[in-house]
Structures are given as C-alpha cells and as structure tokens.
Amino acid sequence: MLPEFYHKCLSQLLTSRQYATLRIIVLILQSYRTIQQLDWSRRGNPADPLAQIEKLASILPIPIKYQSRRRHIQRFLILPQLTTKCIWFPIIKKWLKINQTSKKVCYLAIDRTRWQERNLFVASLIKNKRGIPLNWMLLSKKGNSNIAEQKRLLKSTLRLLKGYQVIVIGDREFGNINLADWLSKEGCNYVLRTKSNKYIQQKGEAYRQLSSLGLKPGKSFYLKQVKFTKQLGMTRVNLAFYWRRTTSDKRKNEGWYLVNNLSGLKPTISAYKKRMGIEAMLKDCPKGLASRRKSGGYNLEKCQGNEQRLLSLILLIAIAYTCAVNKGQNIAFKGVKEYVCRLPENFRKEKRHSNFWIGLYGNLWVENFQMCNDWIEQLMILTPNKLPFYQQGMRAKKLILSSL
Image (cartoon, rainbow, N blue to C red; front, side, top):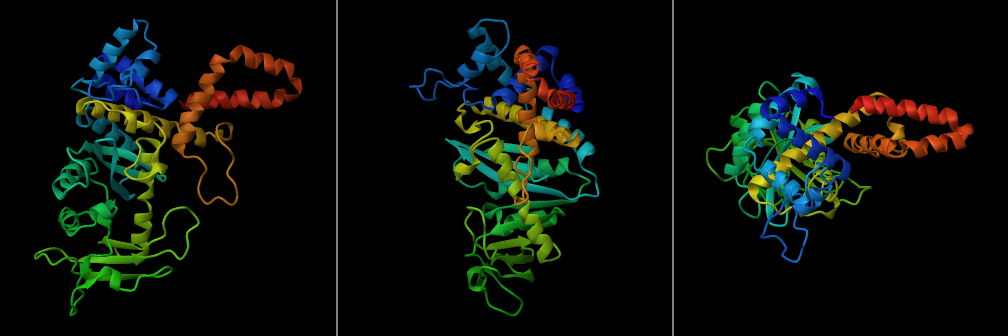
C-alpha cells in the first residue's frame, strides 16, 4: 500500500490502468527486492536466455499470457509521464511538507554511481542517516561529472528545496573551486571534500599544497578565507582539516580536506559526516562506483535497459525505496520493530537495521502470515503454553499492517 499523499499525486497523473500497473510493480520490488531482470535489450548479453525483462514477466501477477505480460511491462516503462519532473517532484514536495520543517537544515548530498556502462549522478536529502533520492540524471559518458552537469542537476534540485536552508555535501569528485564559487553565488552553504594535492594561498603567503600543511592522524584545524585556486575572480573559501586518530571499521583512515563556507570546524565536520547517508542509500538501491560494500537492495546494477526505460526503473525504485522507509518509520513509532529485527546491542553505536530494512522486511513478515495462515493456527494450537506470546505477536502483526 502506498502512503496517502503518494496515492493522491500518482492517481492524478496516471490513468487508472497505469496506476494499477505501477502499484503491482512497486509491490513486486518490495517483495523480491531486485530488478536485475527488469528491462530487456537485444544489445545485452546474448548468452543470457532470460534477457532482463523475463524475470519480472514470469512473476507479474496479472492473469494474461507470459508474452502479453512482458509487452505490458515494456509499454509501461516508456510512458512519457514516468519522469522525475512529472511524477517524482510533486511527491517530494508533499514529502517535504510532512517531514521537513523550514527551520531544519536540509543536508543535500551529491554522488555518482556506476554499474556496467551506466553512469548515474544522484542528489539526495539526508534524513535519519539515510539518503532520500530527490533528483538524478544519467551521464552520457564514463568518469566524473563536470561543472555543467553538476549545475544542471543542482539547479532543479535547489528549486525543490526553495525556502529551506540547504547545505550541499560532496566527496572529492566535487571539491573544486568552480562548484564552490557557483554555490556561494546561489546563496547555498556547502562542504566539499577536496584532494590533498590542491594549492591554497593564505594572506601574505605563497601558494602551498594542502598535503604540506601538517595534517596527521588525531589532528584537526581550520583556516578562514583562503584563496583556493590560481584562477582569477573566484570566491575565497574556508578549509577544515580533520583526521581521525583511529578507526574501528574497515574503511581506510585518511585525512579530510573540506572546502566550505560554514562558521567553524565542528559544524563543518558534522555536516560532512552526514554524507555517509547517501552511501547507505546506494547500498540499498544500486551498486556503487568502486566498492563491493554498496551491493544489495534492488540490484539495479544488473539492469541493461535503454536510457528511457532505465530512468523509469530508477523512478520506480525511488517510489519503492521511500515507501519502505516510510513504513519502517511507522513500525518503529508503533513500538513493534522487535518483531521484525534484532534488538539493539549496548556496544553498537549505530542501529543494526535502518528504517528501510524494517519497512521492507516488516512488509514481508505480514505477507507470509497470509500465505501460512492455516499452518500458523495449527502451530498455535499445538503449543498452548506459548499462547500469550503468540497473542502479542498477532497484535504486533495488526499494528504493522496498519503501518503499511
């Protein structure tokens, strides 16, 4: 079931037949968590007899022949309405009114992910340590995005966030003076990580490379209003230097050089740490650019469709993903998430499972109740000593159902 404001937006933009198809596909994405066979291209792997769309067509619960189901999906994925501007932006505007007050800062993380020959540039709102996809575009090349592409994605995204205080966060791909200068002129705050081989000039000093300024593990410092380029006419920036003394996870421990226009070291470091939310989102959805850790969720990286169908699939993924996050929040609010996931452990600093995971598997848990209902009743009769616990579980199931 889609949230009410999703229903209002989608039912106005799609015909009844189109909307029914969308709801079925979103439900399948929630249940099977994969679109690795969701699109089809003759230019895909010729050795694969089930070319992309075959898998979805085989499980699509519409009472028509298999070939008709496949054509039905193909036609649906090229609908002109399936665009971010037409469908996703109205949903996001409603979502922001419900979940984001104008007094709270919007942390907007930008990142790029690649799978096979596809290159996707994404802008996400970081909320509760997870990225909510706001806008995306496919790049028609391999490698990094350029300033023109960055402006194009951010212009439309910043219009969505008009009226909110925005801090744009980016990794080393985006740590250049051109983007920082443009964001400053747009009235945006920013924290952009840059490379240690860049040069800066402090007042009355010669240009120096960042790596020569003495950053080492356990050390941090802040420089204000430095010249971060030899280009003329560019804005001056602040620079935050930060290097953790030790790290308990498997990530490489290295220094951060953060170009920013915030008020000091602590708010800059705090803002940049929120960028990890987009990494978590990319793990839930498509596989990431260079890390195996990002694989999971809907396995978008295995899709090889043409650009129009692929963008439609990403839109469907965004709908399915945010619905799962919304369900997880509701389940946690009702106090029954222990029926879906393991209890938190004292030594853990972070939650074991995200709201996305709770929403996804909470939905699957109650669906399996319906499939195994007779057997569950039999099991309850055969173990009467457990009846009080079963009754609590049945109550939890009803609360989870009311959250979906």
